[in-house]
Image (cartoon, rainbow, N blue to C red; front, side, top):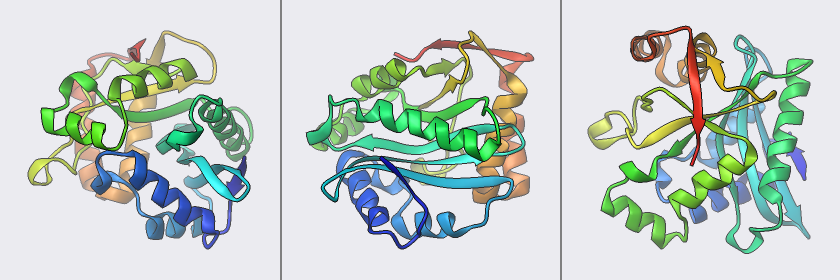
Length: 229
């Protein structure tokens, strides 16, 4: 288990291949050239990190994630384990190491980690077949995240772009793993996290528009955390 700090480390390409191997929507993945560019950026309001699990020089799993300074949270862009290495506790160790890296970036304790994950009940038959072709199960994925301590944020969530015709991706839920167990998450923490995560991708104005849509749906100062699976 190690953190990759050199953008030219061969593990970056290996992680890209792993993503392609195990995820059913390759067009939504962050490709290795972009990961390299993000790893090369200086730490500031947003830090970018890659942690990998290896054995004998072979990549077994990895997670690419971000520290967002203003909300003091993490957002995980991807975490996965090779099919041949599953059932060995690698995902849990990656998750624990992710928290350790985020805590170090925060200079203390990060509030928690967010991730958006497919909602099995909202997948089309075509998407379910694509999942089957890469050997993945959306329900098992949700159960795995639940076992790591993630809960579903009680808020209708959409990834702003990447869906049909360039529109929103509507088959995702927002999950959250707090550092300390709780049944609620402050709405502002969710909004500030997504604002910081989306801003480099969407630009200031569009990110603010999308955050305002979420604010209107939230209708309260805190959001319930529901079972992830």
